[in-house]
Amino acid sequence: MRRVGDFMDIKESNVLLVGKRMSGASRLAEWLERLGCEYRITASYQEARTMLETRRFDVVLSETDLPDGNAYGLISTVIGSPTSLFFCLAVEDIYWWLPAVTQGRECLGAPGLRPGEFARRLQEILFELTAAVPSPPIPSQMGQEVG
Image (cartoon, rainbow, N blue to C red; front, side):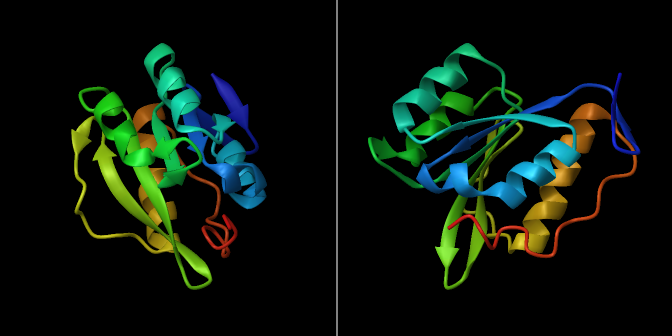
């Protein structure tokens, strides 16, 4: 068992961040760390696909347009696995999050999530996976800086 701040969790969740802007998403990365997540960052579709084929990720957060392809191709890679996949979409000065796959089941077309809604949903997914109790507070700017 690993202790994260004042929060206990049973296993560390693995998150893959995909896209050019993800390396600059420091608030998102810090929040994932506070949640007890291990994360990897890649900018390319091909590298993300390879990582998903060779390693377990609980959650994938991706931009849709990648330098070497469209992230929608990642959907087929995670269907049938326990992985959840969300796409981020810039809307004015914030990002909306579009659910594409929830724990291996395609859900593309489900309503988009505003930053606060996405943060709550992501916490639910991660804590269902880790059976953790109390979670860190959701940052007020969550999802507004991935750009």
